[in-house]
Figure (spheres, rainbow, N blue to C red):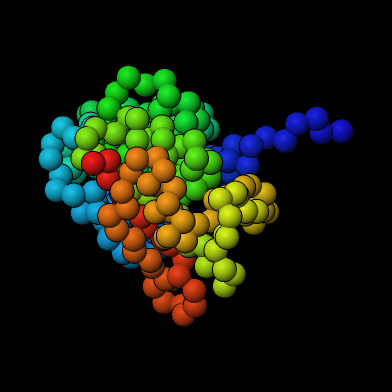
Length: 231
Ligand SMILES: C[S@@+](CC[C@H](N)C(=O)[O-])C[C@H]1O[C@@H](n2cnc3c(N)ncnc32)[C@H](O)[C@@H]1O
């Protein structure tokens, strides 16, 4: 009898690590906001790259994007991920990069515990949308510097052709594992107006919304990319 289920994200990390040992990597030449490499904008979404800007990624996985920002934009970067195995993998890939640190933990707990203030908080299919926005957005607001930027990409709420949520609660989604099994998770599936309301409640102002479809297949958009500021 199984008494406990591991987190879907832990199961995902275990399968990824089983594909081979993590080794040191060169940071990628580009930041990605969608699941389709080379498609859509890059780090310009985060504004002009001023060296030394403090940037945190919530749900960094193996750390490719934050490694790009630390190495190519000279930011002081922190990658946070719920799963210790992902952080171990990120450190094996990019631990050699200057001014880049990784922390294991829940995004909300990290923001509540840290004393740091950030110029930029971002998430790429990471903690934003997976953690209750009613809790996470106020915590982000608290740690952003005045005029600080929040940017996040999420699976598009209309990617399956269904209408987006008509309430503030989560919907059923799943994590697709490398072995093609699917494990259920909750996801907040908002359209742009509902994200604007949630951001406003947390003291943040929506400044942009972009949507992207699959680069070659026709169909519903796959990615929603939102930017907001603390004014
Ligand atoms: C789909 S992956 C995206 C990883 C990375 N951002 C990328 O683009 O490669 C989602 C990541 O979010 C992490 N995650 C899920 N819930 C989280 C939470 N509450 N706090 C921090 N990270 C979380 C998972 O462990 C996983 O590594």
